[in-house]
Image 1 (cartoon, rainbow, N blue to C red):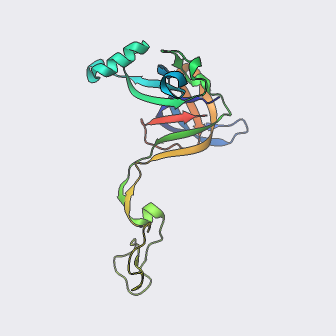
Image 2: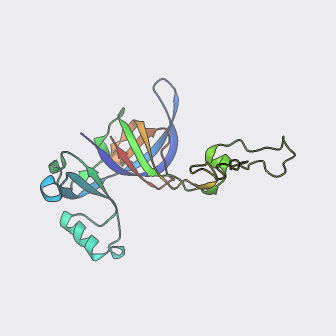
Image 3: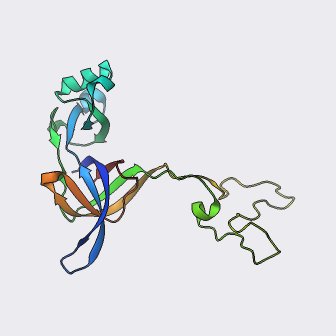
Length: 207
């Protein structure tokens, strides 16, 4: 059965394993999320559950938003996401989804918007070594891409050429991350390794 929850990235820290190994972990404030809509094959053509995460001041919401959340019997939420589930009919409006849906040892996928780094050159964006200053007397070109064109034929730059450009700010999914610890009392999830996004960004955790 598929399990999913929305979380806020708090940051990274380290914990010791039982054998004394020092493991880097990402700490997430996972949920609680509340079910705001249940979609069924009969009514909507597919089976899914819509959940809301983090309360929002009502004065910042719109009338349609207020009506939607009032129908579910929950407060206005800042973030809303939909999960396609085969057993969506087993969920009820207003039901809370907590970090308890996961347990230590689970393998999960984490999806978030990666850190935006603006316009970057080829060395930072693609790992180029740079032209350097060891050949042909080049000057001030240590991090340049070098030649990008072809000869008189085909006399063009091919599509997909690795060049400088926008780096980061993309939707990124990292798969098969291991859940090391679940702290249910504080809705915390400790996942081994790094997760996309900056501190405070919203992360989708799926199993």
